[in-house]
Amino acid sequence: VDATGCKVKVEELTKQRDQSNNELEQLRKQLQENQNQWTVPRGAVQLKRSEELGHGGWGYVVKGTFRRKMVAVKCIYTAIASEKNMDRVRREINTMALVRHPNLVLFIAAVLDNPEGPLIVTE
Image: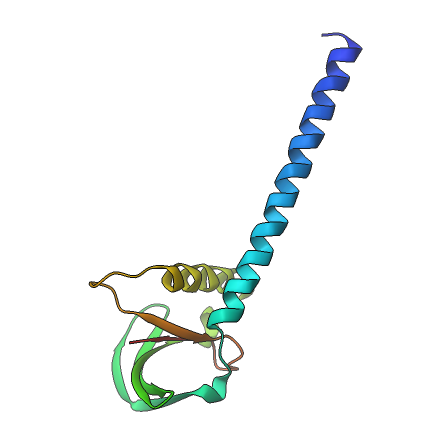
């Protein structure tokens, strides 16, 4: 391959990289917009910690209220709330926010600013 061929290939790869970076930035903006739609402040969710519904490796579920409706609230353990795991939690929440099926609990909202760890509010 001559120098001209290498230069053309480098230009193609640079163009592909720039397109990928643009797509990534658009996806980040879309993710932020989606997150703004389902994020609520901590004060909007009241927990009934004495009424635990279950627990697992990532957290526990208790009864709660949101806008005067009875809900289930998944409380993520503080120890789990590392930045790496928070990305996973956000992805899970984004997926839940998009999925509707009669056999799945309905995602309602999430609290990300809770000092004790994120909360996921479902029906």
